[in-house]
Amino acid sequence: MKKFILSFLVLLSLGFVAQAGSESYSGKEVKQVVPPPCPEWYGDTEWNVSLWGAYVFTSEDWKNDEYLETDHAWGGGMDVKYFFARYFGIGLEGWAVDAQREVLDVSGIGFPTVTTTHDSRIIGAALGTITFRYPFHCSRFAPYIFGGAGAIFGGGERDEVVIGGGKAPTFSTIHHDGDTEFLGQVGGGFEVRFTRHIGWLNDFSWNFVGKDHSDFGMARSGINFAF
Image (cartoon, rainbow, N blue to C red; front, top):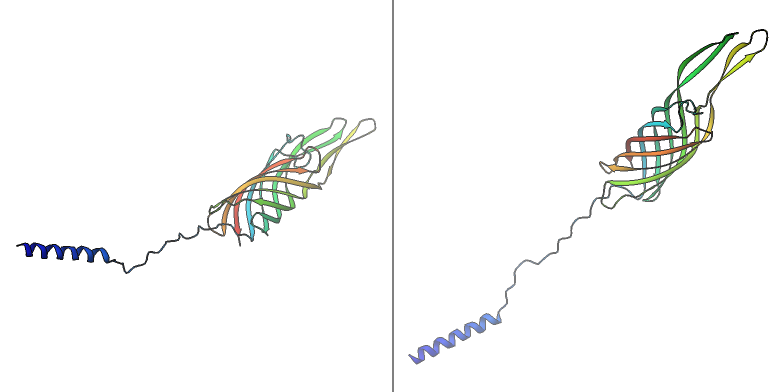
């Protein structure tokens, strides 16, 4: 009995030693999973072509405005920009609006006849621009500010009443054509990219005309194509 117990204890000890001295390895290596990089919706260099609608409103009442000669107008335009760096771009912009003015006509002898009509005409502008944008990393959203300078044309008409002498005064009206004026622009807005190449933009600018009482604001919304 003692021999049996002794033999059992020896075998048990050998089993523990064998178990303690052995190591087990799995046949698979542990690999660290690296998440894919997030998409970038804006390029470090890219061309942008934008088409947009525009709403213009004047800083003065239409009777006092000397260039647009209206309270508000609707129109549209386009611009082309080249971003030579991720945050900076230069471009060209052109737009046109349908602005309606009141035309005064005074005529007659002695007692003048005064009539008013409405003239719908196109006022347009062409500018060079510079843009600073800030695309948020891994985001479709990019706010931007911009400025520009150029020329505005098609507005600034004048109606001049001429009074002639004689026993009874005579009245007539001379209609002066519009002129071209300097235009400066500052503004800001944002763009949201639907895809890497198509975005939706919205912005507002204040425009300074080189003629007194003629400044105006412009709100724009449209589609941008990036290449």
